[in-house]
Image 1 (tube, rainbow, N blue to C red):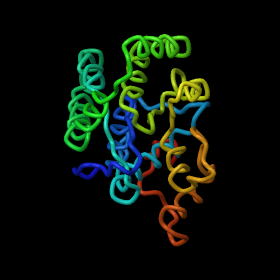
Image 2: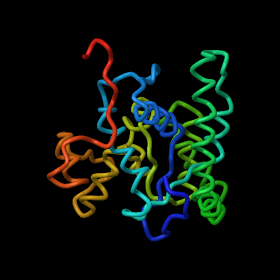
Image 3: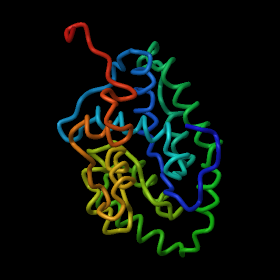
Length: 231
């Protein structure tokens, strides 16, 4: 991520806490290391989404006029991580998560807070919205994130949390909340006229790479390190 303020006329992207979590996974991959907490999912292709996230972080601001931000809730969640639950792992991970958060704050999270404060909706309206979200999402931290995002009137809620949020995005869209994965956000960038909120991008990884770099590129900018069993 480049340290500059985002273009107000571009796409304003709110980062869910787990985007920071997966940013740590990316950092490990770039160092050719495994993230031992990383697991594959049957519901979402994490590898394609992490590669998409890498491109978004690298060129999203300058090439696609994206503004990145998050709320103070993200830091509260990171602060609650207990290092003693896996001391060696979290002694490395927690400072990196706080650094990611601090970088977001320096880039444009102040703009997020300013936009949120400009929301003139009445307390009763905010309460009604929150109760509607609670009927869709059971995790209270996620409900608070969605409410923060809604109050800001930003464009995209970016997450890779399928169980609690992505899997329920069609219901959230009915409330005016656009939830995207990194891959579906790229589809929005390249196909703005044809894109509907949450629509996934190309399933073929090679197609994704060629779309971003041209036909001469064959490898993504980052990839999951191979385990000893895969050699």
